[in-house]
Image 1 (cartoon, rainbow, N blue to C red):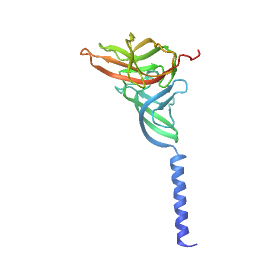
Image 2 (image 1 turned 135 degrees about the horizontal axis):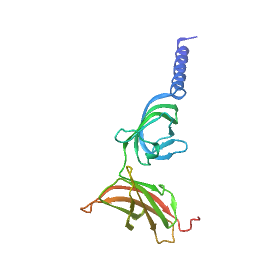
Image 3 (image 1 turned 90 degrees about the vertical axis):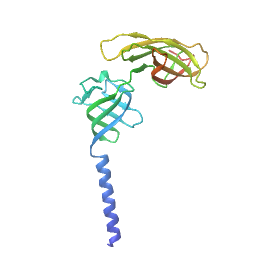
Length: 207
């Protein structure tokens, strides 16, 4: 056997070893991202712009923005988190600890982004206590023209977030793509902490 084939065999074996190391052997480290979905039943978190899930175990430590112990039920969509642990495979990260590094002031819980609703639907969410008024606005997605704007009804809670909700009615007989916004209005009438999502209105949607 000449020297060149031996070198090729060594390179091939090294390549196989690297594949086994990165894909078959659990890898430690940390990941960071914004939550797009939480499943309390399976105790899994899906992050935006990332394949796979974060799969919690009974031993996973959860911490809030202040680095204090908390519960998975206190996590919400749009939270930015940092998780330390290891990959059990290339699509599953098993954390030993998850810490919230940013919790938005306003969170829309219902409807889901890109979901389809009837012309009359209820907006629900979470909002940190504030002296500022909370507004909900609907915009036409294509023209960006306002369709309606209204005050949200806030329900006080003893925890980090109050609840808010508002029934919305859009007078249309046609399918619409809309932008749903929730935001504070400050004393100087400036808008602050706006959160938004695209949803679709279908007047012919069955129950």
